[in-house]
Length: 240
Length: 219
Image (tube, rainbow over all chains, first blue to last red; front, side):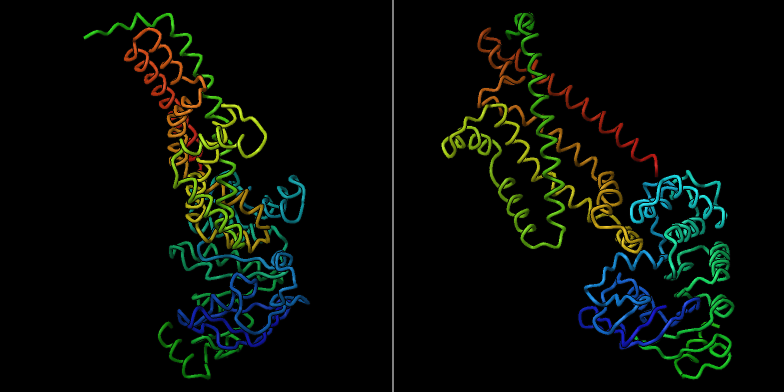
């Protein structure tokens, strides 16, 4: 469970998040949408403290990550993250990318990590690529490896920061399929996305952010068919 | 023109023995310099202001004064301060090591900063501790990018090592100078030394290229 209370973030003098409060229940799938510059990514990155909030509180399960006394490294082990730019380790092979953190952070043996890694690679459909370096993979393949890498830590929840925005159109589907199959396992997920069809189909709730504020928080059917706020109406009109 | 390389033939083995002396100085100094370079670079990009200042001042001083002055200070100056005798070899290794540490730290710092920020974020998101992230994720990528610059530094070190001549270490340079004096054949013996240095640099260059090829295999 993730609980967020009056989250604020400023870069220099620009306030990017202006007090956002929400709760993500265990097993819930949240789509975070909104125009670019609305603070969606910053919001997501605050949850595992890749950005340090300027104000407010965040709890991941019972840990208040905004409390300096809480060991953020331990919390990050429970929260997997997938980035727009994949961020695979280029000097490691696909399998090495996946097994590194479980071995180094969790102290799992190499053979165990490899067994699990191969299992995950099979699930994302890339078993034959385990010895390739990331540079030899397509964007869609890279992102699937990145998902497998995050899952190798056995996280309790996953954050996706625009996972398909850097992909060529023909590769978007394969990545979304992987995320969908993950959704079926009951994983708690927060996904920043521009894929409205996907959000509508997969999400339990849609958070619409605009100008650093949480403008709407609704079920997808409700949000997409009858958005309440003018800002959401304008946004949907532009993209749908 | 009075040139006769046969005049130094009998002294060639003597000069060649200097290769070992030079290599020993350069090799050990390079290791010291590399270790200092990594440490200073980590200080410079780290959070602790005190370490950062120390590393900046260190670099500023060792880059801002002549190498030969540092060498002479260590060799002649240290015994005056402390009651110890520094051998010429030790002084040479320390001076070159300290000096190239300053240069190497700047190379490594630039290399670390050039590693994509996403790599740090991915490591942090996976809960990888700072030390392991630096050792296994950041530095390997940084080293690959700075290899040409590092090679350059080692080549410079190899050539600059010739100034140990002034404190009496019998390296290639000193030996050829001695042979020149004994045979009154300075041109021949110095040219011979020059050829040795040049060949050593060529070998270093080839090694550098081979290592670079190996490291680029993942591209």
